Length: 558
Ligand code: ARG
Image 1 (cartoon, rainbow, N blue to C red):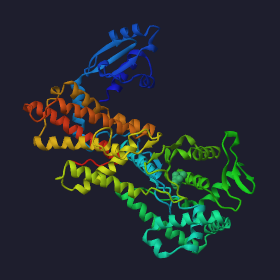
Image 2: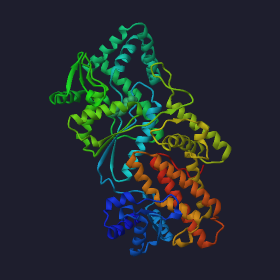
Image 3: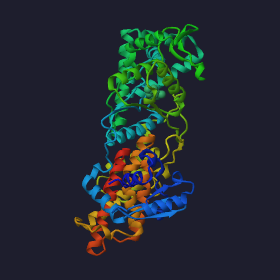
Image 4: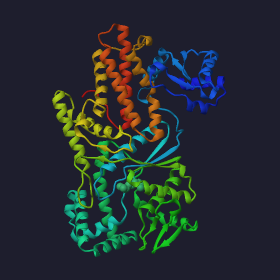
């Protein structure tokens, strides 16, 4: 039963306000003492307090409400505790890992463009953020009944390949490349820039090489192919650790033969013009710089490939939404892209740039050109090693220590990312992030493991529970948070913001630990113990479901 909807039905009858209007007006009061739902009566007459009183007298209380109260201009609704408790706990028991699932999406498709690292370059921290945020939104949408499509728009085309081809032909060694491809390609890339600073003709050579690559030069293509294959092999190691999969790896190169049509279409619509030999779409009217479709030498650009990709995805998947999970530094790129799509007649309300801020490491900022890079594998390794040390101190007898250390270390990084509003910059702090206390992944995982441990010790089944025994403040606070879990998921999807889920899990963990601190479970009389065990098990389930949506494992012991 959705209490809010039931209250809305009641108010539609009594107030003549529309359902949609009521949905916007009704809220959940911050303090539970003020009831479970509050309805502001401003729209019912000049004197809202009087109107609230009148409404209170008129209402026939349905069974699930224990009462209504006028507080200022508000009419506050109190749902019977045992109704919320029974509703929520029986639903979690029944649905288990599916608790929180809904069918809002009706199988409609949503395309997520996420991760999208660049071939022959290290997997950056920005790409990690895109991967983690994108994968969470992908899962959340599937959970809500949409059909998510995950596209890894690999950066496998562009002038940098001209540079690499020139560098490899001049200085490259096959054997070195195979040994550690990304580091070696980075070395070549850095050398290219050092040399090009001294001798600008190298840049011309690189432009020419890329042009020939676009025109299908076979020798260059096979070199490019091997760069791509070797890089992908490295990236897939990271995806394996994070347990992330994609439905498509169509990168920029895939659109090579699909750009001409896009350009011709824009030409037909008279949207293009020549500027110093280059083909552009002027966007001055919209207070943006032009987008470059074709350079003066005929080479295409990142923008052209994104236009082709957008057209392809619209046709191929017929999605209701196309979401790009890409850092804030590309805001302008996407505003320009969406504007050109709009001008060419597409429904741009379908397109969203889900942007995010920087993840700043104490190790410093990256610059690929100078070779100053943080390697993501090293970050993941460090998180795992530090966690192993913590486990060694806290729980040296733990079984499968290595596996748990991976789950906690990796989970800590993911949680540090997803628990902040994605638009903010985050300063990476190893100690804080890995701490078992505070608003961290390990804290939520630890709470889950604690619930598991209580259940293990109790060794008792808890069917036919008397719900009305769960009625003290701490218990009711936990139950309310369990009840609100599906709403947090919905909010995360609506705003494309995973932190709504992460924060809900933190609040739930805190409420649970408060409960556990105040209310004995195992030492209780039989009936009370059964009821509390059911509550513990429900918390365990919801933490597991929530962590799962974030892409984090929930170990039973740690
Ligand atoms: N490869 C790009 C980069 O690393 C990100 C691509 C994002 N997706 C897109 N459709 N433009 O900056």
